[in-house]
Image 1 (spheres, helix red, strand yellow):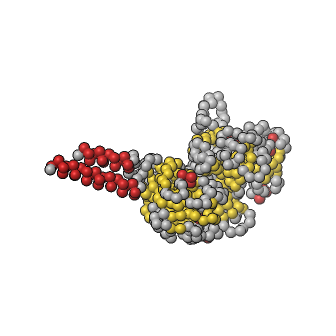
Image 2: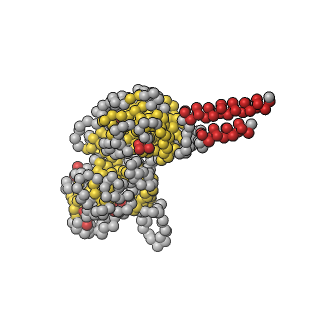
Image 3: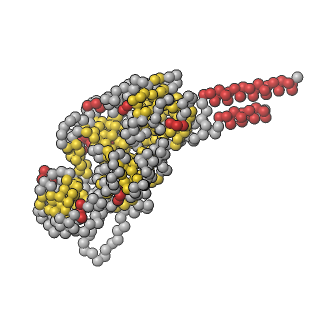
Length: 335
Length: 217
């Protein structure tokens, strides 16, 4: 699981291997820290962030390889050696990310597995131009965090009700709120039955908002930086919360969402354009592309191309209209 | 002269320890401005409109104050009013916001946030408890700004007041009189305080002059 650490290991400690004729490469490991603003029960303060870092797989069997064959819902890997169901354990879920070929960066959820076959969701791999076989496209497995694995029981202020506890909002194409119930000793939704939600997965592009009712503190995470391009499915209509793909600052101009997301609508008037919102606390600063440059949807028509979106900042994409289906957001690795 | 110094000291103590470097960001004397003010969510005239210069119809402009009071205006964090500055504002080295306001009868919301946005899109925010603004008279409360990213306090593009609760549905009801950036959470003289200081100074000068006159007779 992604490491929530008190101290960070920033960077990789590499030692020369004098006896080795083979050079091994590992993705650089880095850390991100987020200042969680302090609040109170009467005056909670919301901090939103996203973690574009990846965990190292711990499961036995092949964690990187090439795809031998696939169907609309399965991927088979020769000699994978996986433990059946180990990659679909709800307490320690995994995702499969393509690392080469036309689908590079695309990530599927793993819902079941045998020794050599993964059942996946989150897209139809037969429609992504994936090449199979001995020299086919490659993949890697990535652990997916859950509320239990990422935050445990005591990262935030728990309580016997959402009114007294910190709440954690997970935003993707929808928003769901949770808190740690100290009476029941488990994560539960802020509304509805008090079912144990500790195994709620936090997909890799999820936005996390902490509604803090106690003192400020710093959350630090360590993980590997993504080495594939950012490749994300975004609904053609409605909202999608995510991040900018990589743990680096980027300007609105350089992010170039109007070209990165297929079907993006630029327009002279905000009311007719798709929008990109930068999440600020619990609120949003919303921009649109007017055909020439980015500007705020409200206020003066100033060119906002130079606005910096810091690494780990949450964003929300809003696609107007009622078109069905989804489109790909593709962003090449900036390093 | 000694007496005058003493009187000046008294006047200074009335003013508190303020550095007098506060920067007024909004005096609420003319809130609705189609060029520079934008209402969103339940705070705008119609929640079906995607932000507009038209406020909720129950909001009202007072004399130097503005009341956000309507049964359908909530503390949802997406309900807000944003004030754009005609030229970038500079809050100098101030790190606190001072809000002068009063709670309005019937509100159930517990807090609101004030956020500054610099020209680079970075933000700094402060949260205020509505319970700190009793109904009936204006009170000034202070809250330290939390600076995000590389916020530039010398080039502030806009400021917005917002409900503070994600998905909040409690009734919002606050009348605002003033928002300023200040150096610390200490007393910032209100206009009435300045009048009091001036009065004390004038009284002091009169006393000194009378004593000087008596000595010369």
